[in-house]
Length: 271
Length: 262
Image (cartoon, rainbow over all chains, first blue to last red; front, side):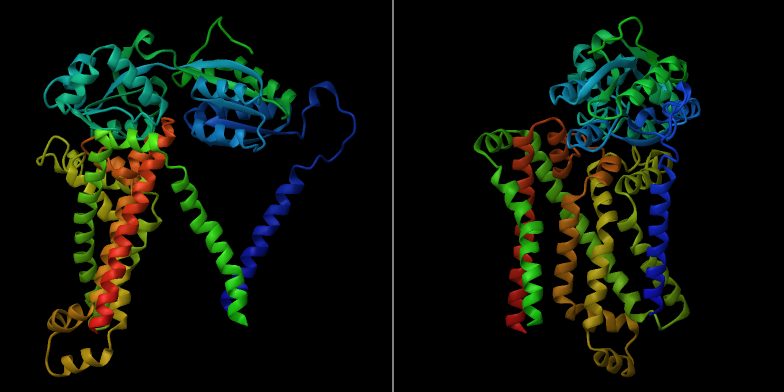
């Protein structure tokens, strides 16, 4: 009996949160607003690749302060977020870690506007032990070096394999037996390097910065291909508010640079 | 009458939520996918790795579970046992509740080269034996639960009689309890095996997930899905289902024989 009462209490408590949520975002007055307050009280559904969380949190704070609108962020893997949008979950603006998903949204006729947002680089990161053994990519095939390359299920794995193949190192790396770990995400690989379980691995420079992992070499773009993070304003959402968010993000691109990304300069590509 | 209401609800839901998805998957198996998958050396290596590692891991699970059963049975016997049992019982639920990537990370930090550097240049991580460890870690609780359920079914009188005749708890456990666990041991092993072949998150973090060396079938399937090789992913998944059915079928067969013999 006691248990039942507790369950009921918890249920009621949860329900009340729910109502609070609904009423908190209800527009208190639908009356005319001044130009600067046009977005006040509106809600923005923001989907962001998990890797961009830190700088995006800062952008959200600026945006909410400037517009008075409320942001509901959804952080996750780019592919998963793309699938959610495709399946019709409400989203106004989407920041993807891979330009590919912006192109897919265009094919699905879900894209109102797309923009190449920031760029990342692939770097050869080393652990505490690894930095004495590995100075460049060629050192990865030296005997006794323990190497990690992300699995091809993650975009970073695809970039890494492509780059190492173009550098004629991939086959030697595989046959050397030095390749010991193929983690599922770039963050897992970064943790392995940070905890000194591996000697070296290929990760994004932004991730190296976020996890405080040293790197010894940048992999040139001619080997990796372009690594572009894209922004997409979704058709049928609150496009005006989304556009305002994208403008504020572009105006504060230095926040992304602070975390290790580079702005895409002079080649902003709009659809 | 009550039965009918239950069946009216249960049967359609069972078919819709359990049987239908499995059939849908099997229905998408096609010739091209089978051909491509069966010609992939890495597929067969992942199958070999999965079955081998899962077999050893489940064996290890069973041994540990039988140990757990002892404390489950004799927890009331002494203060030390009670404490041990409480801890073991509480910890049992932990691996099941942990996100498996975290379980893998825990293993990596515990048995990686920073602790066990004298074993190899990766410690105990990123080797075939690491795959076994990862599978064991996530499957052991299931095995332990199955054994303790089996222990509960044994008649208390038989144990009490043996104890009054002067057998120590250890002797009772070895001579009376373990021989009558029979089916519980098989289901313990079977559950651990089924859980092991479906595990990939912990295996990726601790085992290394290198194709052809430490990659397991579940991880192979996941990668094929993300690479867009849906035909191959479907074939490999169907193979997973067949493998599980084989294990379950085998256990049922033994169960039947036990009942006939009894």
